[in-house]
Image: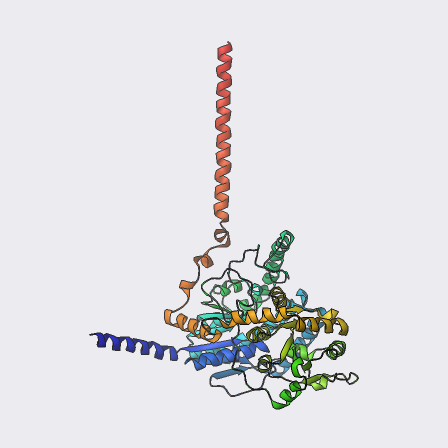
Length: 522
């Protein structure tokens, strides 16, 4: 009997495994650059775990700086017609230039999303692409939530989906409890330890951020009206709450502690991979500096393309004052001809960043503060000097400073002498290295790796038919019910009615007493 039961359990287990292997998952990231790189990595993780993965890829996206390579999962590519693609590209190049000149103000951000809306509208109108996706009858969609179009695609395909947030929580409201007394609003530049005026600022910033978010989402209204029939048009903000799970590209070693819901999972560090020996030419360069070690400078693909002559000149001069060697990602054809390269600096189009961060001779990482770069630095326990340019980068660097892992330098203030002093301070002050190693210990001490957490929760959703049991009923309540405004109004009304009744009763008693006194006197 026991043997029969054992075989029955084994059979059930194998059946589940076979069913999971047959699960068809569509991964979508409509933005380029690091978003596509990360989604490619997620696609491979899920494929290696036994799922049948298809990746929808916007081909030839501007600044999509990675090589085409063979994959074991299916890739469906799409691109607009040539004339429309040229128009899209010219728009985005102008916006990126404006982004770097005006430092990511809200006006530029709105224009960026208008561009994404137009690309989204084109994709939804592609009957060949949408029809092909519908025929595949996917079991689950995995969406990069940085651009709202992915939620409209999921709604159009009428499939369950999980969402992946490649940046901080505060960038998007998807229903998490966010007490304003210690959860900073996106753009506030505050920490979780706010004084009175900090809480005032955070409270006011909440309303400002909410209005800006509504304005951005409202740009998709025309696209929704065009591509969804009347009576079935979704509200974009409501679609965020439909996600079965939210995966967040962050970690307890980096993020401020805050309330989470059961359907919210940290998976920061998905790009982690085993380190490999670095190329011999880099090893030879590093060895020249002996115990002084080296500094790695990698400011991201976008920034690398738009480093100004003045910035390169000041940074190069600062690096020349260091005893360390410096490996710096600068494309050779972008290097100003009248600027002489410092003797301790080696410039390269591309560097094996993760392998260099794991090198025993590294002393400092100079970065733009992108989430993936920060996760790699924390994984290896490397102190950071950040030069944030845009998006979530300034907010990321605030957390790095609070954790004492490094310091942030404003782009406008970079001068050779002061920048060199900042670099030396972080290299020589052992407190930064100690804090980086503490964050490394937190990061590495999880019982499961980011990839294991990702596939484990995906399997859970597939096995249970969704994540309804992980989401609070509050997602289905109107806002006035969720925030107990109806209860407060009822209690206020009851209190006022009681006071009014009490006043009437007291008035009646006083009049009765007055009449009684008059009768006695008479």
